[in-house]
Length: 113
Length: 110
Image: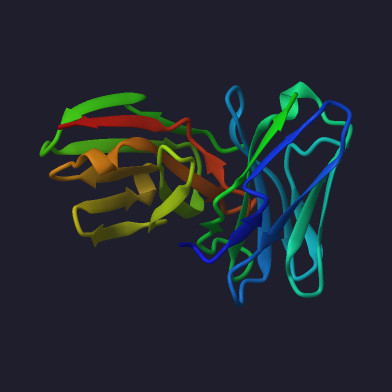
């Protein structure tokens, strides 16, 4: 158990819908990261927050947004869902920013039908 | 950006065999991690090893940062070692995001 929790574990929804994925980092960790794992793209970095502020952005679509709250949990919002958004979404956390070890949650498996 | 290459892409072993997985990266890094993704999809941290050598039970890893490669050794493999092994790095100029290799799929048969 990495100490990072994600809910829900599984999500099945229809095209055009909006969903919210939730992540709680390890106790004391200030950085939260979101990654997407799809069959055709592999594991890709989406976005990072550090202590409530956006720190870095990767290949995140405009239909996707995220935030980190004062209690340090984070939410990833996916809207206007398409079939291609079906993937495993991981949240990770680390103590700080700049080269710290990242610990991954169990992931949320999103299926868009 | 940094390129990460892993080899071999697939590995089939009998229980008890040893194996070496390789990760090459194209630039200086300040983070290198090895993960095991089990058949249920969970990503398990194996090593945080931007340089040097570490051991944890039957697993060990070595990163030679000056030559831009890392090796993961699995000794006396067990069926529970099956899954995909990923190497991921972050660069010194873009310090936080992890760039993942395409993985080595390991199957261990009894």
